[in-house]
Every structure is written in structure tokens, then in C-alpha cells.
Length: 409
Image 1: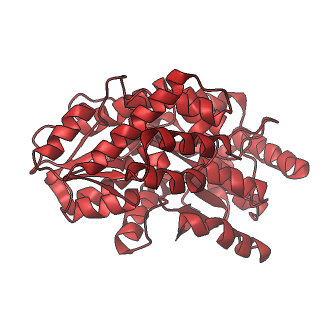
Image 2: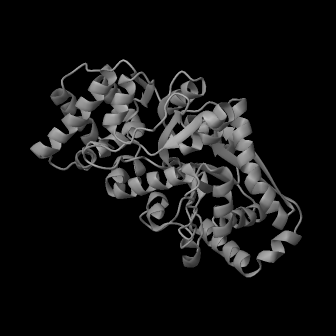
């Protein structure tokens, strides 16, 4: 690993001092592996969506470096690690990998990716808080953050005139006949814990701290709200975010939580019917959306020339001008570069994404231990599902959830 990092640092030094030489070299083909959303399927619409996204970057990059070609392949999130291990065994691993921060750590630990070499100056092109998601204790960086996909609300404005700003308004919306969909997965449902004042108590449980009576009560109140919501006729909990996206596109649901990553696919189907808003607040304040950060990792099988271009492309994507242009053209994500301002009072989408990011920042410390640095889904979901559907009392449900959190790896 030390030898590979030294080589990478030498390549980076060459790139920074003689970047123009890249454009005069022989053709270079980079292979890009992309992990699609955890809940999405690889289907025609998904492939077309990601092809457009890759081409946005590749076409502009080739204007500067016409000798570079980029080919990509989509992988289901759950199968990426296994498939890349298989390719790596034949020295056919990708040069670049786009995935989330947690999986980037898994890939690095498996030896499928190398550390990203960055000068102190280049580190300023990424928000400081995002480095905590991709940095090891020894300072190595397992991947470069490239975009932020905020968690928001998506709804059909032909069925809903005004987006609910509070949880109370959301329940009233269901009572009035609007079909509301919520996910049953812990990570995607955690935003309600912020609105209901339970997030810090859940974080304390996850850290193994002793909980006060007030902490336990706040968790019980959160569970009680979830149980009450599931008992309403027009508020329904579904398996995951992918199912919510599908049902909104089919107009079988009117309001759902969603990830901004879904917006291009939703727009393609719903067109002007699609509207977005920030997640509802609650009696305890702002929601705690779990904003997804996509990262770019360096595959370990690249040749020296492929590695040089891969690093150069990584630098290119985080450039302030490129980040701004991509954000404004896609209207589906926010830049990681803190020097980029894409706020626009005329764009409801950008305003909504910015509001979600701000709300998440307020809860960053609690969210970090619950979802940003560890994946508790497989551990918590089996416990959470019966809690929501009222198979136990709020007190016993809270006890079971706390025990699951305290057994975290």
C-alpha cells in the first residue's frame, strides 16, 4: 500500500506541474463502475439516466482531453463488492468507481481501491465535514466526494396543492385523502427522529451511553408517532425508497420521501406534475434528512497512464466551475465544493435541496454515528418493522430498538 501511495503521489506531482501533457498522449480508455441506488433495479430507464449523467461529465472533459474515452457499467449496490473481487482476480478491475461513502470503505479494506492522493490545496475544494466520511484514522482518503444527494419530499402537485411543512400537516394531508408513502427502513425513516426530538437519544444509544428517562421517553414518543401514522388509512409504509419512487411514478401515491438522485427519473415520467419540498418539521424542530454523498474511488488495477488520467478526472470533477455547471444542468444534486453557490430563488428544486442540506448540517454529529460511519440497516430494520406496525407497546418497542442500537458492530 505504501509503495502504491508513493507512486500515486509522484503521478499527482507530475499532473500538477505538467497537466497539459495529458492531452498530447495516446488514447486512454477508463472503465467506470457505478453502484446504483441501494433500492433501485438495473432497468432500461436507470441505464439511460446514468448514461446521461456520465456523458455530461465525459463530453465536457473530452473537450480538454480528447484522447480520453470513458466506458461505464452499472452494478447493483449489494453485488458491487463481489463483482469487483471477481474482476480484480483477473486484473480487470475498473479504473474508477462511483458509490457511497460506506461502500467506499469496504472496497478499500478489500484492496480493490487505492488511496486518493490530494494536496492540501485540493482538499479545500471539498467541504471539511465530508472528509470525515472518507478519511481513515491514519489520514488516508479512500475516495473523493463528488456530489451530495439530499433527502427531500416528492409529490404530485395535481393531487396536492401545498406541500406539508410539518408532521401534523402531513397527517392532516392523509386524513384529507392524499396517499402518503413512507419507507420502513431505518436510514430512510430517520429524518422523523429529528422532527420529533428523538435523534440525539438514538445517537446516545448507538454510542453505548447510559440513557436517561427523558432519552427513553423521547424514543418512545418517536415510535408512538410511527405507530399512529401507520394506523391512518392513507399513510402507508413500504419496503424501501425504490418502491416509493415506483409508486409515485405510477401515480399510486401522492406524497413520498425521496432522494434527489431519483429526480431525473421522476421528471421523465411525471413531467410538470412533479414537485419537491423540504421534509416536514415537527414539534422539536427541523427534520434530520440523511443526505447521500457519492464518491469517486480509484480502482487498484489501473495502469500508470490510466491512473494519471483517473486522478486528473477526479480533480476536474471537483473544480468549482465544473461543480456549478453540473449542478445547474442536472438540478438533482448539490456540489461538494464549498466555493460553489448554486442558490437560486427562482428554482424551487435548488431551494429545497439547499434547505435539506442545512437541516442535515444541524444534526450532523448525531447522524454521523448512526448512518454516516456505519451501516446499521441489516441490524435495525428487523427490529423496526414490527415496532411500526404496533406488534408491541411503545415501551417494549423502545427497549428492543435501544438493545439493537447498543449491539452495533
